[in-house]
Image (cartoon, rainbow, N blue to C red; front, side):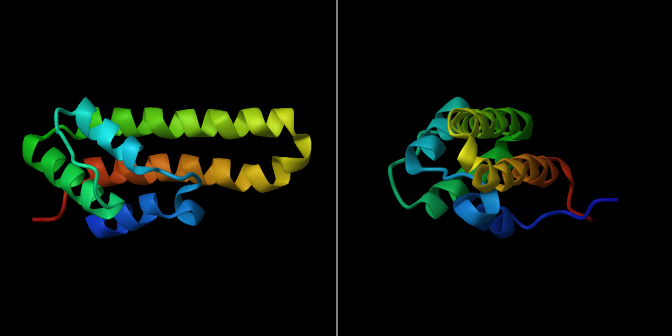
Length: 118
């Protein structure tokens, strides 16, 4: 059985290029909020993610947010794949980032769907 993931762990993961595999900017987070019906002001990315996850948990829109994050990460992965194809010498640098994006998708899924023990 999977253990519930702490929100602060996921937030830090998404904000770290090294952990996540791609950079998620403020505009990306604001657009995720728009998809689930939450208007977010342009503030620090950590504050935006905290607001986003709190809203999702209280409104039970986990699936909607998961799809939106997965779509965002897939777009970023496709960009990296295009770079790797256009510039083959970058493949060694980009492949680990692409794998990290896939791992981030799995982490988001676990966070949004594994229930905390009662």
